[in-house]
Amino acid sequence: MGKRIVLIEQDCHLARFLSLELESAGYEVQWLEDQQEALELAANRAIDLFLFDLQAGLEANQAFFQTLEQVRPAAVLIALASPEDLQLQQELIQRYAVLAAVKPFVAAILLEQIASIFRGRDFIDQHCSQMQKITKHRHLTVDLVNHLVYRNGEPLALTRREYDLLVTLMASSSALSREELLERIWKYENPTGTNIVDVYIRYLRGKIDVPGQPSYIETVRGVGYKMRDAVV
Image (cartoon, rainbow, N blue to C red; front, side, top):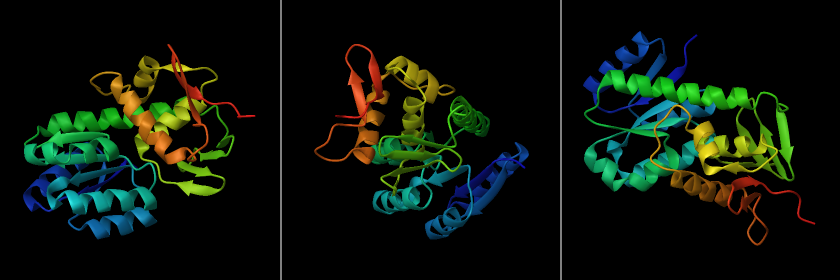
């Protein structure tokens, strides 16, 4: 069975066109117009990718992303955006989506980008396959099968980028440079510089760290980042 994609799109013509293109590429596609329906589906079924049109507006989209992060942590999400939405919702896109496809887009290019994202996610999962299915680092526990992260038994809502970054650091016995992290996490994509690594390190620390305590992620001067050993 192909990868499962949920398309959240209010434009019927675009939705039908995209659905046909995705199905022709071998994907299983479900088209929904309503954000709430998508959240209910996400809570009850494993979804490999969400294609989400941003036309509902910043406030509604932010609420959707935050709820999706809770019901389906580490969800892979591509935003479909007009040039105006791309400009107005840039911070939201960077935080939650792995890619923004700007309308009008070429379907063949979008399909290749989707295939690249799936290759990247599979690469990370395979790279971490030598780790135990339930892996721990200090108070953090990662369920590699379901892409879930817990701190002291409490679930943490990570985006897929944040999850990928965490497990990549946990899988390494030494510090990884920004270039190495870029190569592993954005392997099949085209990021625009290593500063994106620092951005996601900041996002990840904001999710996993305990205020007032040393970060789980150590900055190694002149090298990059590593998981911090237990603080005595």
